[in-house]
Image 1 (cartoon, rainbow, N blue to C red):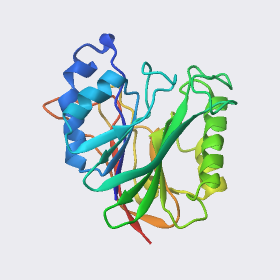
Image 2: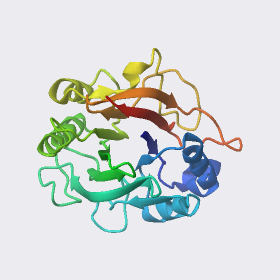
Image 3: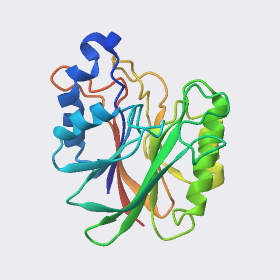
Image 4: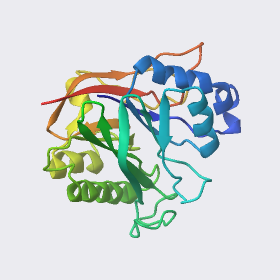
Length: 254
């Protein structure tokens, strides 16, 4: 299974030449080059996701916006429909009222959410993928949001069961944060970056470079291992596909 986490960067006119309409093909090319089976995306709006999907005929996608309506940003999940099929899917808000999308708690700057899907490969093997985008302002919202995701993963067959699970997302925090400690200590998840000797930054503001720390992550339950991890710092047609580098990982069952 090859998984990607990819913050698409919402369409902002002030980005000028880096605004979404100018890099749709580049974003699609990054996904094609990774040959990812499943991609957890962040910051895509409905129109952006439809435009990206038009460039990726081998993929389908699912999700809902963080407001519960069509408008707003999604934590959409793309998947290769020839390799996997969705069995169940859903979403919950990262707030004190998780069943009510659009509700805000913990001094969050905007509504936050998690989208999940249970997939079955053609071999019959099942996986569960969780995809999220934590708040960029409130550390309280990030910590409580990840604890909510941890609780939901514990309630599912993703933890302590035989079904492998993966968590992707833009966590808006560096490796020394409470969020990362929670994933290590409370769930015992495996960080994809544990296989790398050097990671570097994943948010680059369309400037490139490696100096710094990551804020985009891929985690997996202990019943799988990471066989390869790649942070894609390439340009396509001379342009970065986003202000975040896509992160891809290959996983194998233990």
